[in-house]
Every structure is written in C-alpha cells, then in structure tokens.
Length: 230
Ligand code: MN
Image 1: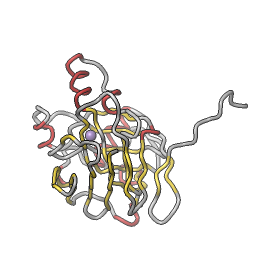
Image 2 (image 1 turned 90 degrees about the vertical axis):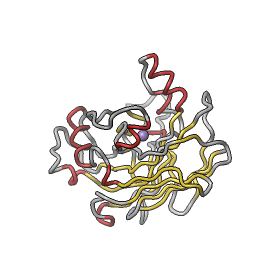
Image 3 (image 1 turned 180 degrees about the vertical axis):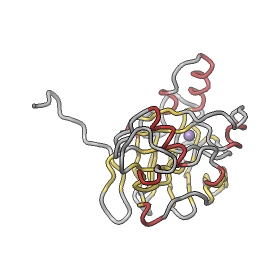
C-alpha cells in the first residue's frame, strides 16, 4: 500500500545509554497527590481519572541539555506540573497490580504543561480538556532511564524550581494511586501497548511561568529535566 501523503515521523524520546523510545500514546493521571488535589479544590480521595496528550506533544530533552519550549498561544496562565513518567515496554489489558512492574521499560522526568485558564473555562462549561492539556510541546520529557538501571521507583523526592526558586515538592511515596495501581487502572480501560507513556500526576505547588523562565525538575534516583520558555 502506498500512502497518499508522507506519513509523519514517529515521536520519540532519547534513552540513557543511546537509542530512542518510540512514543505511541501519552496517558496522564489527574490529581494523584493529595496536596495537589486539595489545591485544585478536591478531597484527594477520589478514584483515578485519565486524559491523554497526542504522542507528538513530547518535547524531548537530551541528558544535560536545556530544552526550549515556545510559550503557547491562547493562554495567559501557563502552569508547570512536574511528574514521574513511566515508559511501557510490554502491552496488555486487565493487568494486575502484582504484574504491572513487568510491563515497565523505564522512567523519565516530565512536565505536564497546562493552559490553566483554558482548563478552568472548559471545566466550567463541562467541556473536554484537550485544548488545555494536549497542545504542541505540552509534554517536555527528559531522557528515559531503564528500570534495570533505576530499580522500581516507589519513593524519592520530586521537585521543580523556576529560575532557581523552589515551586513544587513532593515524594513519589505520596502518590494516591502508585505506579503499579495506575498501570492496572489504565489497562482496565484501554489496552496498553509498547511505546505508551504515563504521566503519573503532579505534587502540590503548581503555578504560572512566563517567557524567559527556566524550569528545573528533578526526581531522586532518576534524573533531571531543564526547560527554558521563550
Ligand atoms: Mn498533570
């Protein structure tokens, strides 16, 4: 079969030690740390819920480099959300919590960039979040490190600073739905496939960034991610 237009190149993320991880889908978990759920006006005890970003929303940032993100249109309130990202190596549906870790290829530090003003408008009107969450370059992500190198990440500090000033701080052990529970819950609704990424939710302290700001995220035992806004 011949394509009638040139097929787009697959989105991918660099991997520590060489090579790249091809991205199929990006799943995201909403309000997965209690303090962040509270700052968004919720109790922190609701079941997990999900949204997606397009695969080509990734903004891959190689180890030691500073990514450059263009300030997106249609917003005056662009927020940072630092998150642990899980890269799926082995697909499946109805994956049990006990089996979930066997589906993980590795992890990365990611940013779920959010046009918070548009998200607020959409929430008020009961409309989808796509325009707030799934815009171009809305998923900056650092080098993926294999689970074989990091071990299972169940605890460790997750932080974000803007221009050197601390903004977000949490611990992976404070996830309401941990990584294995999240994989199980997503695979109950969709068939996970190799190449899927999961943004696991953000700790408290989300806030706005402006053109010229530099965001620096870190997760203990994993790595760092630096992104400049222009
Ligand atoms: Mn998020």
